[in-house]
Length: 207
Image (tube, rainbow, N blue to C red; front, side, top):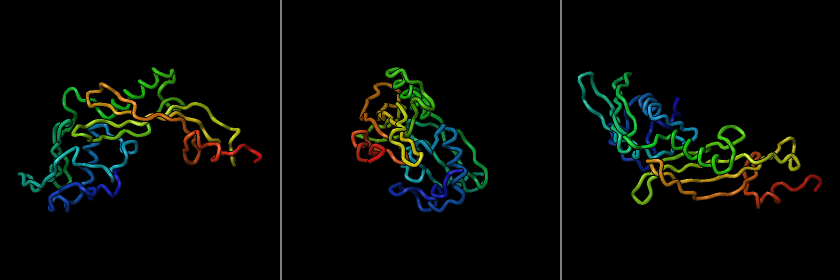
């Protein structure tokens, strides 16, 4: 289920007052993002998302009664309508647009090919994949990390830190021209710190 915060639109999203008060919006939003293959646990969270990037929403009178309609914007297609308890419609991606899940996989495979580390647990994993609009264009911003090694010599109270390489990419919606925006090594236990700061965060055992 989507979090309770999904019932109200995030700050900055312009929504007509009658839609803002729409009852039971959560089922429609859940269906919508399921159809897009969107996993909010790795997409920054729904509560803080700019939903205006995805759709326009409005209340409409239809033969079955009052419905709340979510009409998708490019690069998405289709619409969903919630009429009472009933949710109808289908949404998807425009032709030539890489889906959210495919975008993450494209970057994972890119890093795997460059480093020889496979995608998956204890390999290259996708931490976060968000949809951004910058300079008037939409793109995916994908964060991945690559497992390097455990560092038991720095353990404290059985908490063994792990050394990772973290990368941030920008990927166009057609999946072309991936751009590496940031790359660094980190040491992660309860939290992550840049590797160059690890000497202070994880002093050698005995000090």
